[in-house]
Image (tube, helix red, strand yellow):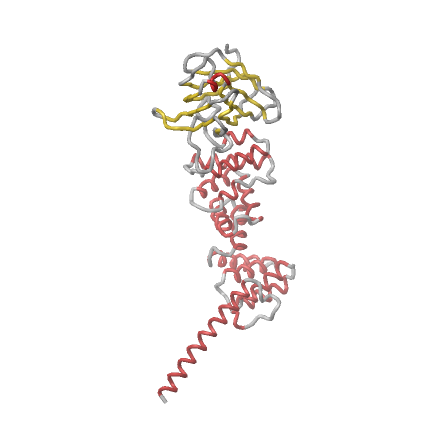
Length: 388
């Protein structure tokens, strides 16, 4: 008898475990929409009813949605999705007081229900509660970075100074969605592009540091849209300087405004430590001109001067600078008379040449002598009107 009772007890435990698994599985399938076409089984605990109510709501069947939502609410009174469907159907039916109460409960039941977060983000924005809106949209973006409505609300926030400030504060908190949103400028008009860069500037002033890869992608995208003026504003530069120094590239690469070094037979260009800083070391041998480094810059129309310290030259003119424009035109370059350990050239940028590419090359005479040059302290700046 004892053995039989023990066996019966074990079978009872197994049956309870199976029932729990069935309940869990049916509930999961209902959440995923797999049971939408079936009658709501009692084992789902209301998830299928919630899903069917949401489907009816989105399809415009408000009466059916409300009936299903009320029934689901009886079974799942503390579930965020159920509370949200019941709340929105109540609002659609004109019962704003009940709908608001239900949506408040939905918002407090958890942060994982995306439509609830979108609803409260928009409510907060309409009320001018920008930090609350930023918090809700942060939750949305963490769940689905590419959600179209979430992106639209983020753009609405960026369009307002107070919204940008709230988002800038939110960007200081580590997240995985910012790189996706910040570098996606497809379809943005001029005002939205201005707002995006203004928000990034505000965030930087608040101490937010961005990964180089994020800034590089956004800079390249802005250049592709013809907004070189905005690309230039993304990074602070030394006063009066329009070119970056010789620095080691980050793991993300040199970026649109970094030095790009060339590699070719008979040519080796590397950035290496030298003295208290870094210098560009160029080894070259060959019969002709050898381009070894270039950088994109955004000089305004007019005259400018480029200069760089050169050590190890074996000829009077060891290198030359040339500059071209992205629109196909060319800026004129006049090489200055050579001086020991310094190379300089005067440039004239034509109107319409908004983006330029400065190219440095070893001269054929220097290359034939086996060039072994160290370049440091490059400078590039417009020449004030009236300057000699």
